[in-house]
Length: 262
Image (cartoon, rainbow, N blue to C red):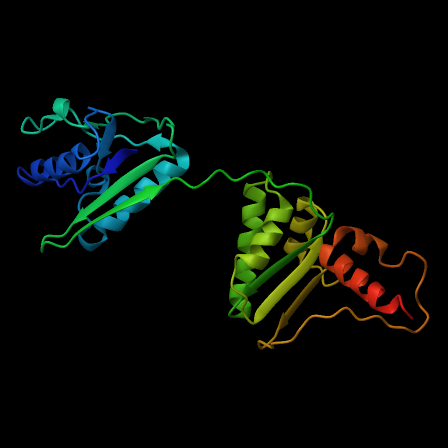
């Protein structure tokens, strides 16, 4: 099911022949198909990066999977006459082309061969399809944190730049990623906004009425809902919060059940 190999590919008289032959033996243990798997090497683009050669090939292949394109081997004209590609599973991909899907997810192998005999090969697979986000709450909480106040300002600027470059971004996805997918540091900045344009306006101006910026040492405390109990309540107070926030709704229902016998 592997349809691309990022080879070590140093273009040496002996090395390429041995590498392709080894790959051929590995593939032939599973299939007799011919010329179905593209091969290439980033060394044609950037040369040999020594200790970084392997990770460069890995990055290239990950990008190819992300973009669903098979990158070409630049300056390729004719294959090494000592390599029998016609009787192998491989062909040198000479032109940028669509990486056509098959019955399985797109998969690729990446080889990195050390001069001292330390050889590595990894197989990577394209990321699963992510369904579009569904409906979400009308207001979103954007949270940015950093180790210093300077870094916090940089993070805020980076977020603004990203939102400007990607106006199609789902604001709810941004809020979720910032809250769940990022490590929390002591210097923090939060804002509550309704639309992408609203978020941009707030974060660019840092309106103190809409933005809270503070520094706080980590404290392991539970979060609670607190009500004043001083007669300031009114009919349907908190109704929108109840309808849109599942945790708030769950806790209010729990409190109601506890108080019901009384």
